[in-house]
Image (cartoon, rainbow, N blue to C red; front, side, top):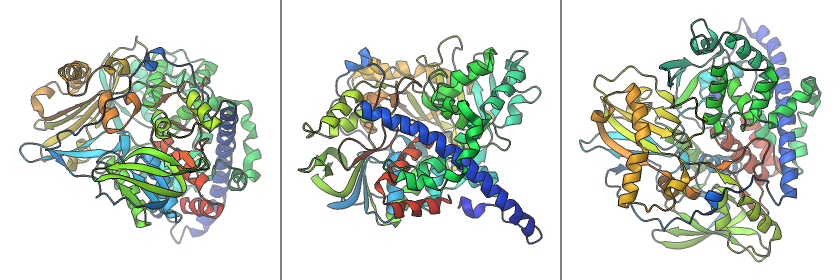
Length: 634
């Protein structure tokens, strides 16, 4: 859809357009080459170090996490007000080319790409809804209205035809790996665009527009909150980061061409003639794998607000402050949010619409997507290769044989528990030992509300809230996100109503919940107590919010563990730039692959889409891989 929406030259401008097209293609290849070289070098370093360390390298273990006990067996919950949302589940086949464990965005991207190249793919999801941390669900209010709730991401960019139009016109690829996957499988959502989000600061609440001019315009954010040198320092930082931004914008090209085997030399080889053009960036390319704070310090940024702002953006991206965030991640975001025509995207119907698009891609190519299919074990054959999975269903236990591969989209710690018979594989033993050393990001508190919209205040659809600038940005309850998607898409709530999702951004301490039993009086009391910070943030923009509530649901770390099968309810692995690396997508067990936020390049929608792409590439043959590249337009 995005490709077909690219502006076409008129007859009168055809000759001019043809001349410009050659320059655009050359520029595209240079950017692609820059991205391929730098990201591939980062990946080679990771791959090299992972081989030395048995599969990955991690920071030291967290004492408080090592004491966490396993969660109790999951039991049914009251769903009397639920309304079916996900596409109808398929039946479990007895055999498939590839079995994917989990239907998070990474797993669905991997499955959709493999299915598009002819692989028979089966996706097995434990939950009743598809999508993992990106799933949606409906809840009917007592008066018969229906609300659509989202469990995860609310801020999207670089996905709609409108937001990618300029890149398409210039012959450049879209800069979001998820966009590349949707193009490759010929599926899409209906996208809504907007350019303003709100910030609830300790000083006051403001609206912030994305784009280069909005941030620096007279009377804008920098003038309101920055010091006398804020404008100068911000400009210097963006100029310093520009080469890295240019490289990072080629991320989809990298993930589209990259694979974890010797054939990567062939798939990457098409960009080699242009690689020399990026050597002018020199040592600065090394910054891509260093903490973003190194770039900030190199520029000499000292303005208090800018430093706070960058810390906030870093935390929103991957749950870490700027001194722990990879510079490549921030370069990608700065390029996307502070370009001339920047905008934000929202899928009509919520994040579940993205999930549905990927499911359609799998099914139209003969694949199966099955809900309420909990994988108990990844099976190994007599040669120690992954050969299938054992699945628990409401009707009983079944096995699914995988002819080519098993892909786990589960988190790192859950995956290690799924492989039970691997004592003779020394490399897997090392993999598990190093994996257990990884720190876990903290978890979330969620507040899902259906509210009366009468005399509703005029608000932005998204907010980030900071309680106290003087505390570390990652302190518990210090940063929250508030999404009111029905302001963008009224169909997500009954007429005259609104749906709200407020959540702490990966800063809810896991340890507080480790000895709490789901559903107990203690659990209910703690849930009420820990959600108050969300209510307080909401009351700053909707003072009478409590009196408006018609539907209320509170999510906790135990909710993440219970429904999403997240180990201890964690957000994912905590990797500080320069101190550790994530594993790749090939595990020490032959024919067992991994994708999602526990693998390179990490947490976030673009990252997990990239992960799923690299994983699919590695499983695919060379001819199928080139078919995918062509479908993506690379």
